[in-house]
Length: 136
Image 1 (cartoon, rainbow, N blue to C red):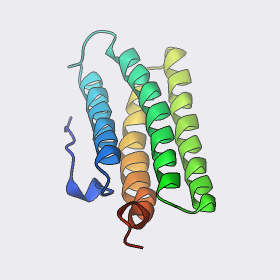
Image 2 (cartoon, rainbow, N blue to C red):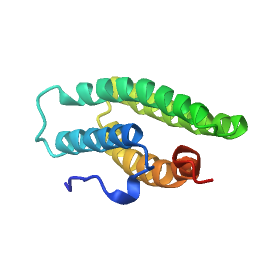
Image 3 (tube, rainbow, N blue to C red):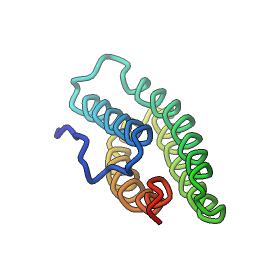
């Protein structure tokens, strides 16, 4: 399976948020390793654990940073709705996995890459860049 690398088009021009988004790519690669049988034994559980920690810290940081940058409250609320939808989807994958259905890992890959990285980060997150950079 292909490994994913950080690309400049993923940047939101904030070093800490970019570092955190690069961590998501590392998690996607951990999952890819599991799907190829190249990860450590029991690694699927560690992918979910890594995601749980990542989601709670990243979403809280990003939302706080947006408030600090003066991003409009109603747009932060919309962003939180997307974050909550991502969280619920991840919890759903975890429940399926915990029930013994390993296909949850395969189904999670396009969600992490497509829905989260491409749609959310390269789409929704790009909307706040002018506030972070002061160029609005």
